[in-house]
Length: 111
Image 1 (cartoon, helix red, strand yellow):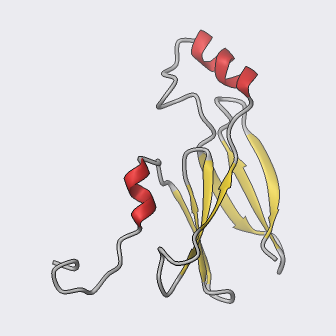
Image 2: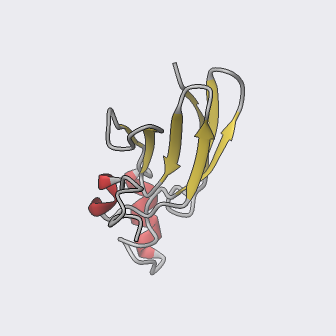
C-alpha cells in the first residue's frame, strides 16, 4: 500500500541480500546508520538511496575459516554481522559485530 500510494522510498541496497539487523537514527546529521552483514550503511533521511555511504567491515579470513571448520554455514553464520550501533560522542559511533563468532568492536568517525 505504501509503494502504491507513493508514501515511501524503498532502500535499493536491500536487493543485494544483506542481513539488516541494527539501526541508529542520527537526526542531527539527517542520517540513518544501518548494520548489516559485513557492512554499515549511512543513509540520507530525506532519500535513503541518495549519497549512500557503505563501510565494508568483514570478519578476518582466518576467523571465517575457523567458523567453517566448526561446522557453521559459510553464508549465513561465518561473517561479521553488525549487532551494535551506539552513539559514543558527537563525532563517533561505537560499533560491534559478530566477527564470525569472534566478536569485534570499534569506533567510526562520522565526520
